Image (tube, rainbow, N blue to C red; front, top):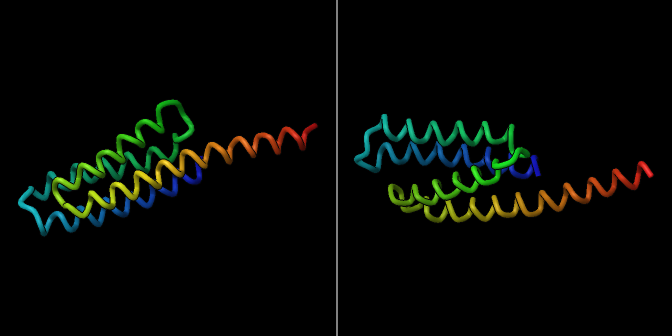
Length: 112
């Protein structure tokens, strides 16, 4: 699960970065506010990569996905990108857990 979720989160960092650049030019929101919110979101994404297997980390990831969708209020394109990344997040968590179970079964069989 760690690899899939981390890949999704790193991809999300780039989306947030580019969205912030676009928002600076296309909205009336202050540049400082845009970069503060975007910077916090990007930092959370990167930090979450390191703690993704801890309790509550997946829930924080879902909160980030909702924040990305909510960014559509500022840039309508973010609605679509947010939904795409929420789908990727679901796939990363769902299939990542399945992969973790299969790895554990394979390791237990190899030790037996």
